[in-house]
Image (cartoon, rainbow, N blue to C red; front, side):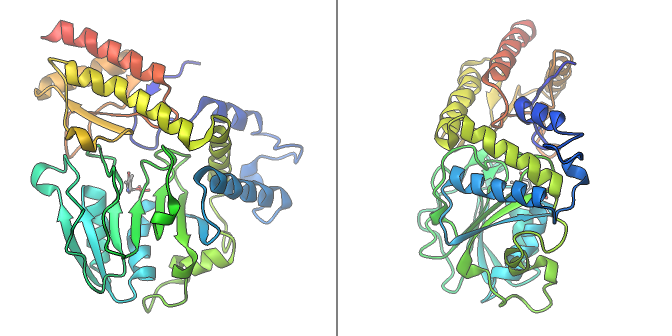
Length: 360
Ligand SMILES: *Cc1c(COP(=O)(O)O)cnc(C)c1O
């Protein structure tokens, strides 16, 4: 067996300890004589798994009592519709456009009401986070929406926008559990877990209870109402049972590592290894405004497309895989999520140093 350093943006690297534990439990989960995959979601054994997962997530993030944790399906993309269907009571919402995912969410919301783009960084290929200290927030906005960490462009909100008292909704797909978070500052935060937590197929939504009501847009399907899932402990229908089980193991792994404070410090240190190199390199450079750099997704270029392609190819042969940038931006991107060990980033930098010497 040989594992590579996987810099994929998602689905992405998972902790080796978690994968080994899941492998050991594959055929016989704790004396049940079956895999978690084969288990009824209505069984006692499974109820214990989902309950523990929720409890551990609440402990990790310090989720206040008045917030519900929902395990959903449909990807982060389905939330682009569920959010307006459930939360756009006045049919008005303000969106901050910092990349493709925010833009898609905004476009989807436009199907249901008046979705205003109140700020955007499209003018400079989304390489920065706009000043959000005094935005023209709509008087009757139901919420203000952000994509907190922009997976494709490598930017992150270091400070949440001033919503002028309106509820904040955030897509945290690619920064979920990467550092401490104050949940009470959000009305809702959510993310697909395949970036920083678990296998594709699970979405976690954390929503303030008072927002989960029957007052949804007319025609909202039962399955797309938060209330349906909240009222049934995320088991109105069959949940993505195995995926939730793996997420639960990752929550445990994080708690064992000292929780989000420790993880945040580790991520700062890890990202600094790569950013410091990029800032001193005479071949490679980062593409994002320094103060807005993501700790999770690090895009970089040489400035020469042919050389970028050569780098990606040689890196892959050396065991550093999935470094090709998003198809819309080109260049390279290293996603260095929680489960990427610092040694992976150090070795990548050594490889980049060598490539730089050979190609300048
Ligand atoms: C990947 C990603 C999405 C889309 O997720 P799906 O689960 O594929 O729908 C949305 N938002 C962000 C920030 C992402 O990184």
